[in-house]
Image 1 (cartoon, rainbow, N blue to C red):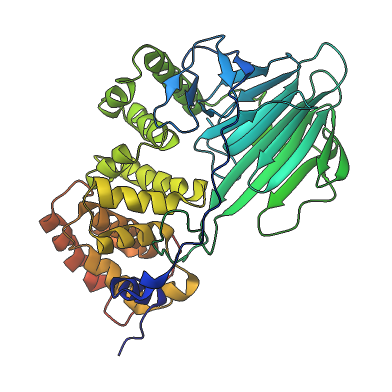
Image 2: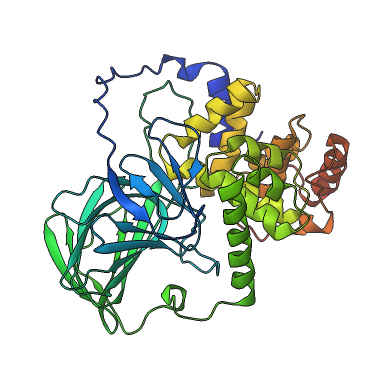
Length: 440
């Protein structure tokens, strides 16, 4: 008899109501809204930055030269930039057009706060930003907030540059448990940040400890993880890593991506209601992939779920799953927000919603060493929900390399998936494990 795999057991227990007794703690009264103040100005082309009010749901493109207000959520497309109200700090958003960042960079979002005793106060929610001292002389200071951290970065001289990456992910095998609104999750995504001094000198205050840094060759790097204590000593680098050298010529692929993003920016600035739809229906694959990244960045779960139902290419299928996995890790409550969306907007049953989220969260090493995990995934290939079939197949193609001998059609019918399932079952008898085993 097969031993019950923990992730399957968790889904069954939730279906039987074991989690029904989870009570939401009493909520504190909401804080009064902060005044919305102009704190920066757009210095890039129209449509390269988009804004959403703190309590809003719609993103609007910002014109060139427009004011940027505190508390608004700002999403930056590649090559966007802004400048502090006093002009002493410039914030640029290079993105990851080369696709070679050490941790995935799919989108960049910030919230600016009124600057008190600093030149710019930035809450980095995800992605990559470049700070530059653009003062005519002297230092410029940025207060940088991310997750539970607040660092104060003093760029000591004009033209000093600091690059910061922030990403997050759920640990493989995390169990999804639906919870009531306002109930904190027992676990949180793992976040990591990397700060690199590209040029000049800087002093970074991390929890009251001042760290002196200088560009390579010198103490130029700080690394932070939500699993560990904050850094206390900068890491010395002899030279900048290739991925962080923004002066290097772009590859042809990066130039094509930059052109595609610029095309989207122009269209979004003119027709914000139509730009995403036009890119999603474009003949060129690159433009459809950009549409997926935009949908994820702007919280368009409808577009991502619809694409996952019948992706027309392997590339769109893979990117769509990857972006959904990224979206639920961007903030600790995003997994629940996606679950609620599936239930209320897409009419998923509670069981289907839980399966969807668990397939996005993936599997632990213990799960992958249980034969039942693979049999359950094979069974999901017969599910009436195309999204669940496609999520299960996405995992199986990574966990069972031999399965590639029998193509799977992510835009196919349920009958197509059933035929592929029968072929894949021949590769993996009920009590067997894949060999070699690969974690997707």
